[in-house]
Length: 193
Ligand SMILES: [Zn+2]
Image (cartoon, rainbow, N blue to C red):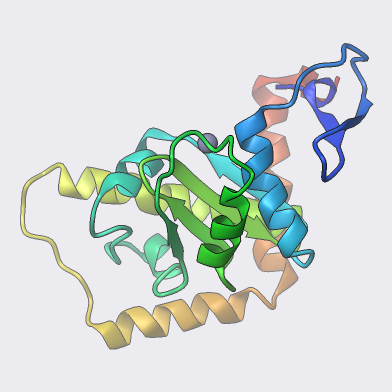
């Protein structure tokens, strides 16, 4: 994925800027999901959605995201769930996506994947990094078939509140976002092209 692979579209899905000038189509299901959040929540500047194996696996677990790791505590009682309705080609689903997200910034799309949003790209990236790590740990921990330790509710809530207080500190999200391009530069120096 390079910068020139990206297209800018409006809220109707029309391409308004394509640096590659090849009139590429926009993924229709992706448009449904992303446009729903952008239309209803202008405070959320950046929306990201992934199909990682760990994210999909947790999305299929009835219990959802468990407070098994510090990464997961960030989302303790602060994550939404949206039931699967098929490939998201029906624009009517946007209403239900927005309803289910509520005031959260992270949502598990059942049997599908993860969705996060932030008031900045840095915040959305941080949400996604933490959620992906939490899901990967949950899959790994459950795979052992051994009894698991879950901290008491009060401790989970305390950790969740701590993460919430960090969000007012710009550096908390900015540092990992600043580091991410440096990792990409090492392996894919042409990504800006
Ligand atoms: Zn998807």
